[in-house]
Image (cartoon, rainbow, N blue to C red; front, side):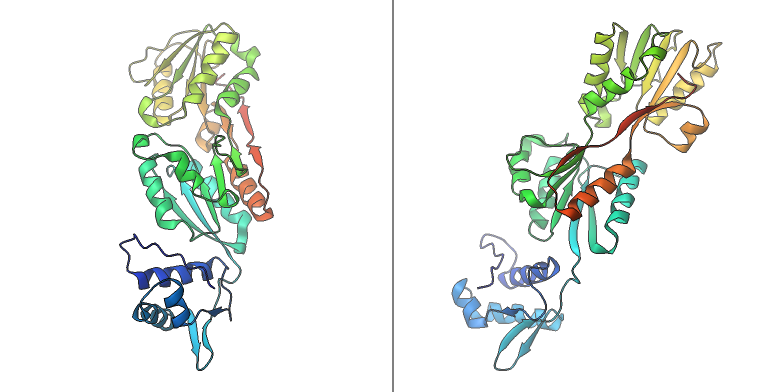
Length: 336
């Protein structure tokens, strides 16, 4: 008997649920061309549905071209999903860096998959709603689990556990508390920041103070600040963590680690209004590389966004449930 995805508590009409269940299973490849569906009588009896409900659903499926009726034999699937994997990609936000991940992910998949994109905007409740609406409709759910808002409104761990482990992929950040093995391509923000700063330890010795400019309203991982703090404590650097560069009076002997580009621009402008020489008695390190930062000779610490997308897609296609730390490194330029 065909396993119908039916929720008797749902407000969605039963016939619509039958239609959506059949279409979803065709698109996921669970129902293939020429597969036979249960008869109207069988479907009605097995799921305790009115015959009119099943007839209405089958009629709509037939009119939309998903099934055909063969007189004296029954109902058959008339088409399939062309063997394509269906993937729901759920980002925390849209940005130029996320775009790099997205396009490298698509390029690696090629024609083998159909990818839909949604954004949860760091909101746990919105993410929960996205999963509730789409659970069972895709082969894979690729999630960036950065959440800040409405965490008290949902049990986030239960929402993630509702996704079968072999269909769940974490991107950019892992979620290690889940009991079952899953695929993850992630940054280890705390260790990555620490090791990136450590890699340029000799250059940092000429500075007496380090300042991290990290807005509290930017939804950035707190592990960034922890990694920065750990480096400064371990290597006996005076340090500060501030939210904005707008009120900062730049000081000789200071190296600024800057997350947002507006703060970077503000600091460059202020440094140029002083006799201080960038890379000699005042330093700048920015997060994530761009062409403009390369032209301006700004030192950056960055992950490889394109590698993240490629790796996730390749492991997904190979069916491997591995946890892979994405490359993260310092690019030294004259601002340090």
